[in-house]
Length: 263
Image (cartoon, rainbow, N blue to C red; front, side):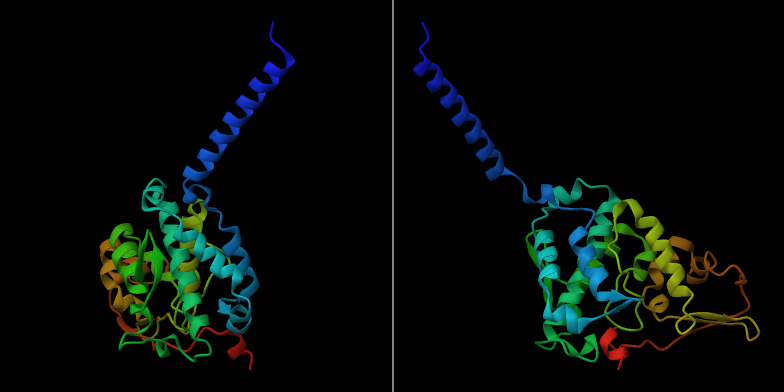
């Protein structure tokens, strides 16, 4: 006959076995498996400190916890996990990391008038080892040119990567996500091109004035559309195929600082 004591022992044995199995699952769990690809934490940071493309660096520097927590979470994403995501999810992740690390770089050195004032060891801001990703520490230049531009061949990314300068595209007040990436990139491109301080077409004088971004990264636009003009025709419906000159506007390197612009 099975005694009550024996039944209790059996129940305790199975309970311990279940608890031990759960412990093993917890210990061996991949930290990146729980990474939030809706970017709720980063979204809260952007909604609090970004308005009309400008950043309240004074407030963000005084309360950087949310930004740093988000960036810490990105450090746990392994390359294996990242490579299992669809391409849109990968690119959204890299854009968000780039922009968030740029925010961190600025507040770590704030107050500054321009991101170009940041640097050490004879190297500028984009050559500082500030990006922790896939177990490595790299620079913003390496993230942009060695990962994003190299592997994704998406020229519209130049209107989503924000270098903390007024000449840059406006910083979006929400994260990029894989499910919305195409719509977001297209909207950012149209918004950038509609800013007449940076881009405009003078039909009377047959002059196309565009941002230096189109000169610096001409190869990316040409690879996708045959030429810079070919890319722009998708956004300027009245742009002729030829018969005009292209000039470049001045790039404003002053900081995209909300508090500075409110003075």
